[in-house]
Structures are given as structure tokens and as C-alpha cells.
Amino acid sequence: MKVSLPGRLRLAATPTPVQPLPRLGEALGLELSVKRDDLTGFAETGNKARKLEFLAHDALEQEADTLITVGALQSNCARATAAVAARLGLGCVLGLRGTAPAVPDGNLFLARLFGARAVFVPPDAVDRPDALFTRLCEEVRQAGGRPYIIPESGSNELGTLGYAAAVEELQGQIAAGLLAPPDAIVVAAWSGGCLAGLHLGKVLYGLRAEIWGVPVQFDAETIRGSVWAAVGKAAARIGADVHVERGAIRLLDGYQGDGRAGVRPEELAVVARVARDGLLLDPVYTAKAFLGLEDTARRQPGLLGRRVLFLHTGGGFGVFPFREPLAQLLDRAAPPA
Image (cartoon, rainbow, N blue to C red; front, side, top):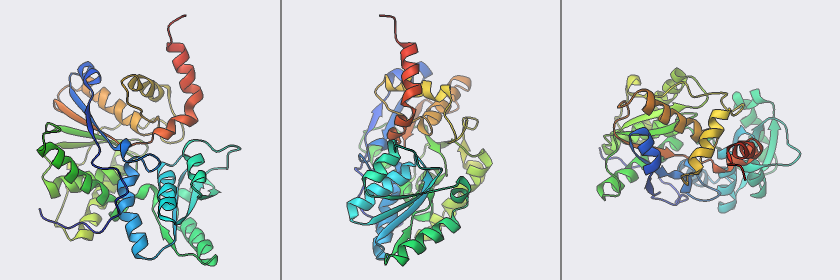
């Protein structure tokens, strides 16, 4: 299907490489590989860089001078938005869920380092962000600025296009012989924005792989509804006649754990184990997705096919707030001296 995507900035280091994971794959009976979207940059690393290419372009087109987004204290989107704003010479304001820590860590520390102004608010203010966005935009305008809203996780019809474009990139890598056509692609799903982009891109660019999302906080039907709606809005934005059936939105459910409220030993164990194969996951998002992939491959052999591609959406800075429990886990696992 021939379509033209709207304008975007070139912020991400793409195409991101695809690397085999032979030892991890052998243990699961799979030909396993990973698309390294954790390498889209350094501070701008992860899936948010692809989304921000479209969103930041739109902000500049509207002559905005301040990017505003909301999220958790350790929001990857907040950190990436702050980094992109600094790169483009824009201001950045973050509405963050919770109270200010005595010493900022991880993503929060980096966002502050890039010059973002953090406003700490009760959790429900971020869960229902319209009033918060209105307040933060008004503060920017009162100071003479021109705000532009980036929704949490960059998940709107423009952000969704980042992963439609990623499918076009992936198809190019397959055509160049850099990757055998995968039977399945597995990706973490928080808001469903990346998952929606992959489904849209699958139709636009003829990808044959089945796409499997792993919900990391919300229940499966919530994610399925969000993805279905996001595909429709993104397709309408580019004038494409694309319809994805709800039943085609495949999910590996049951790995949400404590959502973003906490991290369980199972997720920390995945981070520690996969790191020994040279791949850094984060405990909140990608570790759950990888756990879902592993568990499914063991419990339902063949469901994902033989060739499986794990789409690594980044978040590596998220290990630092969990360094103490990770260190304890590593100490317990270390052989005696």
C-alpha cells in the first residue's frame, strides 16, 4: 500500500541493528533475535525516539518553544522528551506522578540534567491528565512561552506513526538479507502506541509476521481497545484505508505483575540473567515482555513459530533505581570465593 507519512525530524539513530540471541534462543527451542531499539540513541534511546521524530516535528511546525509531557517519576518518555527539547533548543516541563525524591535518580536525574522543569503531582493528576496539561500550558503561556503537548508515552496518532515507519525499516532489513523473515514479533505494551504502529505498518508495508504484545500494566482488553482505536486514528491521519480487527491484536497476557507500582523478583531475575548474554533489559517494561516470551515458548511450543524477533523498546536507565535489590540478587547468585 502506497502512503506518505507526515514530516518528521531525524532524531533516532536508525536503522537499529538486528542481533541473534543464540544461547537464549536455544534454551527456548527458538531462532531468537532482537531488534535493538534500545540503540536509537543514548539519552534519546528507546521507542520514544521514533515517536518524537513525528511529535517534535509537529511542535516546530506549530512554532512551539516548550514541550510538555507527563508520566511516572522514572518515565522514559519524560527523559527522552527532555533530551530532545535540549537538542532542539526548546524548553521542557514534566508533570510527574508522586513526590520529589531527596536525590533524583535514573531517568529523573537525566531529565533534570537536560534542563527540564519537573512538577510533582498526585498520581490521579497524571492518570487523568487533561487538567494537568491545561495548568502546565497556562503556566508556560503566562511566562511568554508557546507550549506543545506530548501525551504520556507519546501515544497519539502522530506518535503511533513512529512504529509504522519502523516496520518499513524492518522490511528493508529483511529484503537486504540481514534478518530471515520472522514468524512472530514480541514487544512490551504499556499504552499500546508501539503495538498500534506495528499493526498499522504491517498492513502498509506487507509484513507477514504475527505481532504479539505483552501488556505490562493494563488488562488485555484495555490494551486491545487502545491499539484498535490508535490504528484507526493514525490511519485517518495519513489518509490510509486500514482496518485492523480486534481479534488480530494478539496479546500474551498475565505478565503485568505489579504494573509500574513495583518490581517483583521474577522481573529482576530476568534482567540479571539476560544481562549475562549482553542484553540490558529494564525491570518494569522489557523484562516483563521477555518473561512473557520465554514463558509462552516453554508452555505453548509452536505458538510463536520458530523464528521470533524480540523488539527491545529501551529503558535501560530504569535499572538504576533498582540497583539495591539487583545487587542483592547478584550477591546471592555469586559462587563462593
